[in-house]
Image 1 (cartoon, rainbow, N blue to C red):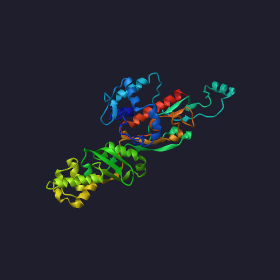
Image 2: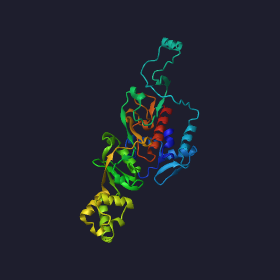
Image 3: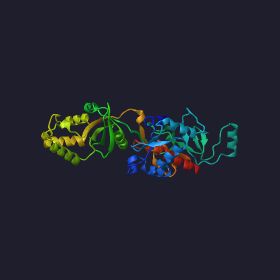
Image 4: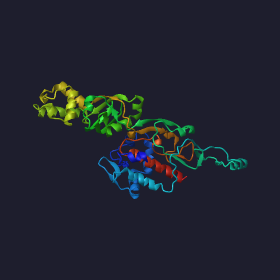
Length: 378
């Protein structure tokens, strides 16, 4: 509940309308196949309908994100707390052990009598145990865990090593950082890889943030972890191809030959001045004086402006974990563990994670529904 209360900047981005998502892999870099089944069972429309019917009216924003109409995440928290009425909550009770079902035979009459005399429970064959206590069904929803889930270690499950996702980039370039606060619609990628993203880019005092950066960090989460969060970022400032940018520059030079380069620009003034310096061009140069070499340099900077990446941010609230319980362990129709019947997994503890924009919470709602339907129908 604590993480839910701070998501979406304290407003709780419940889900997304999925408009513009051509393939689920665009939203879910890991777990696409399971999410396809989960969304059929409980879709984004089901999420909005459920919260509305339970006292949390919702509103769709222009960026395709759904929020509570109140813009207050605590309304979502309180709604879920009301739904837990009648459940026994055991706070400050860490799970230290989880034992799966066994194939052992039932206890003998003598064993039962001895156990009764010692006031110890006799577990039926196949009973799941949490901290030594028997349960018919167990659902693990621990969320992402940077150091793994220790109590799952004895179950023989395939675990995918967790790495951070959804983080911002540290870029040491002083010229870029001097533009702190600017937001630009861009294309961004990692040089030497196929990882790319697009959307609003926020320039900060430590480097780059905003939806485009977070989306790229999600797509490239494992690659970046393996490279120690080092590499080269390439920014396409106009989010256009090289031919389109070159044609715009040529047209501007032909139509405004006597105007200064600094006076005609396709991006914000401060950014344009920075890009002219990156291209090695004087601001007092006239468009007629640009020349073919200047045209080539400016085209390259506008479409493929390279900056060294020197690490990721350390803001814990931005982290989503890529990794967790491998999807090969579970029945994708119910999310029940194949090796331990009655044991289910939902949410970020699974190797399912998404880009920013409400997709991770939708995965939580949808996978939780699959689990519930699975064990209620069991």
